[in-house]
Length: 222
Image (cartoon, rainbow, N blue to C red; front, side):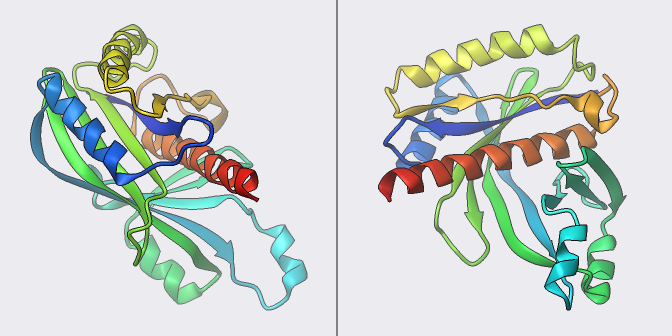
């Protein structure tokens, strides 16, 4: 029994994400009595089709992601946002994909941070960085409510917790705020009972938002 919301840090117009904000957010969790429990890591990969003829690439889905989640070490999740598809596979599928070479890794992003316990909630706050880089691309937070696994039944208590959290963050006058954008799980064929596939879909949604934010900042600079 458990349920999660995945949020991302949305910088104010003209500002960017930096390690100082991540540090302040982590201190914020501790200020509302969050107890640090240890490290938290997850990895998300964008795939591109590996074809000899460029014209064939249009037949393959462009927005194709894979994600490994720490709570399901033996599983791997694929999301194709365009067709609203989410699949759960055995983690060995990654080795198979490497051998088949039908898809290649375009970019891999790591979520790296800490897990905190706060009553019936677990919070995970971490940075988003590409492989072999410390270049901060974003900040992500998981809010997990342990007693309930119904998306609808947990909505009110999650919203109330988020109000308390946003108030705590606002006291630090940081240039941005955390955003929660809930996907339409039914479009992916997911029911009200929460599963790790729901988590995977949320990460795909968050990544789309982070990419849009980075592109918006770059277009302003240009």
